Image 1: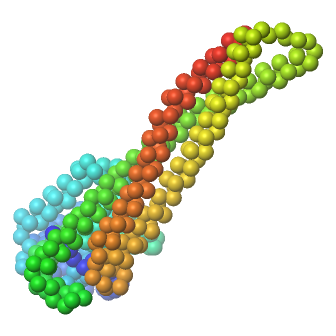
Image 2: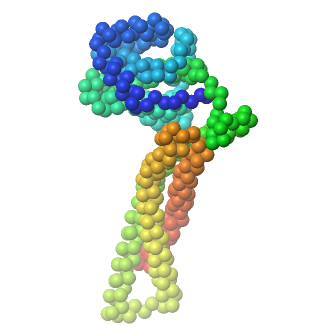
Image 3: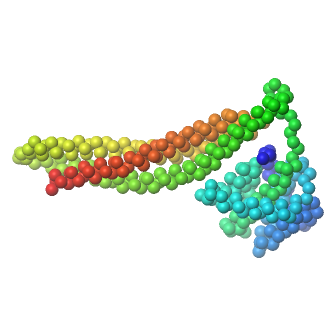
Length: 369
């Protein structure tokens, strides 16, 4: 799949400033002119505008769309008429994206952010979302469902245009590196390796987007079980301390006359209780450590993305280096695997700890009675 150079925040800002300062008549003329060039897409736009009850909502929808189309003009690609069946397929494909199992845990906005990344237009969703965040008036005329509808339909139609542009981008015939022009064989090998690394980067990221939220959810469930265990361990600790204190007080007043078997049994219970309390304290520290590292994972993602942007040439227009970019994703995945291993250990240890606590508590109850 051809990767576009994404539309920048600056480009969105310039187009937005131009379109949102058009008068109502100028905006209507824009749609008339656009429909002359892209009749089917223009007709689809008119159909979407009819879906809004409030005229001002339709006006805002059209201004968003016009601003995005203006940004697409920067690709300088003379695309042919987009056919109606191509639009229908694009709409159907857009709806089908939301049915994929790997995004079922995503929120609506996260789904659209994910799709925009896939389409090489990561700033598209942010452009629309930021307008609502920074413009109180827009939030007043659109409720939450109307905002979601606006964003979804505009992005859907933007993707149709985006996909069409990809088909008509000029093909790059030369590939340059420090040696100058690379011969065809070297280019193919380099390109294949590059795409392989990029595919692996995408696989890791998509896997983490599913696995990390699940690990957070599983950890929260495990925390409840550990809280219950630790409360029981605390109760047992207080119980045995009280029993030891009582026995010490009695011993100062009279000999308890414990025989060898009783003394041995009591020592065993005391030792088991001490070991159980030590393990409980370790479990507390391990749970705390895992909670802190899971909370820090967002920062790990942020650092990873910053480095990947650098290696993929977004920061300084250098040729992308997917190999180093992949290394960053592998580091991130290793962090996840480490956290998963900690969680698995804690999960597997809990039944053992619970059994040991039940055993020593039962023994303590027996000698107290």
